[in-house]
Image (cartoon, rainbow, N blue to C red; front, side, top):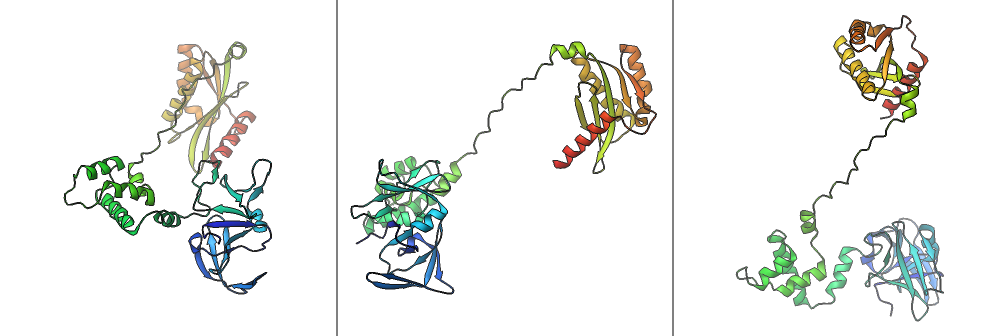
Length: 344
C-alpha cells in the first residue's frame, strides 16, 4: 500500500493525479471534458481538479492509487536531473533554487515523502513545494494521543493570552506554578512547539527591523596635478534652464567640462549672484582661477558685483554675451541636464 504522504514521479504517466486533498487547494469540478485513464486494472474517471502551490493544476481523484506527478509535465515547469553514479534519485530544481529529491524505492518507484520534509535547499528559503502548514501540523499530531493534543492546544491558547512571552520564560512559569489553578504543564508547552511550531505572531512582534547597511566613508578623488598645471585658468559658462516650469542654475567649465546644477527658487539678482559666487568659490578652493564668466543678458544684473570681486581678488570678470544664441558647450550641457532630470 502506497502511503498518502508519498508523491511519485512517474515517467510512464502522461497526466498528474492526486488522491490526498491535503496537498491541494481550490479543489473543484473540472469544466468541460473529464479525465478517463486506462490501466491494467481497468479505467478510472476523474472529474475534479486542484492546485498545487508553485506547480499548478492537477487532477484530483480520491480513488487514485497514489499521488502521481507526470515526469513529462514536471520537466516543462522545472529542470530535472539524474546521475545514478552519485545517487539513485531524480532531482527537480524549483524556480526558487531549492531541489526536490525523488529517491528510488525498492520496487523501482521514485518517490518524495512529504512527511519527511527533507528536501535539499540551495537558496536558504523555506521549501513548501507540497507541504502546507496545515498538512505538516496534521502529520505532527499523528505522533501523539488525543489527550496530549488537547494539552498542546490549551498550552498554545494560554501562550496567546499571556501575550507571547519567550518560550523559555513560558516554560519557567508553568514549571514553577507561577499561574494559579493552571492545568497546562511544561510538557504541554513543549509539545505545542513540536506540533504547531513557533508562534508566528510572537515572532513578528519580537523581530526588529534589520539594521541599516554600513555606508562606507566618502573618499574624494584628488584632482590630478597635470590638470591643475595645464588648466589653472578656467572659463566658466553659466545659464538658466527650466524643467516643468522650475528654474535650474547650471554651469560648465571649458576644457575640464565640470558641470554643476542647482535648483533655484527664482531668477532674481540676489539668487543669481549667490549661486555664481558659490560655484566660483568651489573652483578657487581647488586652486583654480576664473578669469572670466560667459553668460547671456539674464546675468547682466550681476556684472558690476562680479567686477568688484575682480578688483578685490584680481580674477573673475563676468562677460555678458550680446547674442541670444548660447555657446555650443552650454547648449549641449543644458540638453544633457534636461534629459537626465526628465528620466528621474
